[in-house]
Amino acid sequence: MADRYYEVLLIAELILAPVVFLLLLFITAPYGRFDRKGWGPVISSRAAWMIMESPSLVLPVLLALGAGVNRVELVFLLIWLCHYFHRAAVYPFRISSPRKPFSVLIMSWGFIFNIINSYVNFYYLFYLAPHRDLSWLNDIRFIAGGLLFAGGYLINKKSDSLLRKLRADGRTGYFIPEGGLYRWISAPNYLGEMIEWGGWALLVWSLPGTAFFLFTIANLLPRALKIHKWYGETFASYPEERKAIVPFFF
Ligand code: NDP
Image 1 (cartoon, rainbow, N blue to C red):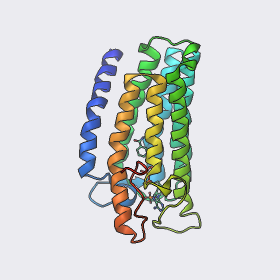
Image 2: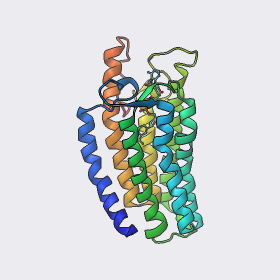
Image 3: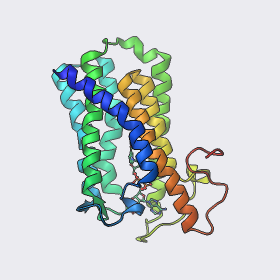
Image 4: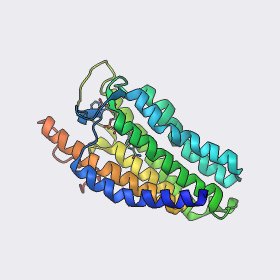
């Protein structure tokens, strides 16, 4: 039965990625700078991030406890938790706008997506994938994927921290970010996130990992393009040479 759930949810994630991509090109998710009325009840953004991301912290640990994992699988779990411990338990306490309204609808969608995504990733790794021995940690896919994951993680955290500093002195509102990859692009935090999950797909070498990578692009690329357009329309002095998400290209 659990295998059947896995198959259905994995297919759902693979189908949802292009659908979400197309939808987000036309409809902008109503949170942050694009928050607007008409999307139902709201909740504080700190609570929203904690609730929305919590399944990705809890579910993989429960699956690991249920399955019993070997050392390589434990490494996979620790890499994943590195990201999600920060996202669910640290990031919400560091955002500069913790009380800003966040759509309950978007939070609920994120919550459901995180259940599906963490379930398919770890059900596959712990219950279905052939068990990998320690030699996997020397495999080029693990090493290259691990480097990409670490690089993406650093880009994402550094970029989010530069955004936070823009409001460090108690200022509110939006300012032109400078430094780091902001020299070249408008949404380096999203670029870092995409690189991270590309690295994950490579280091676990699985279809669910690839599905998550594709979904991350589907979710963040349209928003990066809109953020870039928003900066250009909002700030007359916005650097013209800055691109949206890929330095020097677009
Ligand atoms: P944003 O870049 O929109 O905002 C991040 C924070 O910085 C918010 O607190 C925002 O405030 C503030 N901020 C943004 N731009 C400015 C500015 N110009 N001046 C001052 N403050 C600014 O990112 P998201 O909120 O969309 O995402 C947050 C994190 O979550 C990112 O690291 C992202 O990669 C990750 N994420 C991952 C997803 C995935 O699919 N894996 C999906 C969505 C996010 P305010 O809230 O007031 O706008």
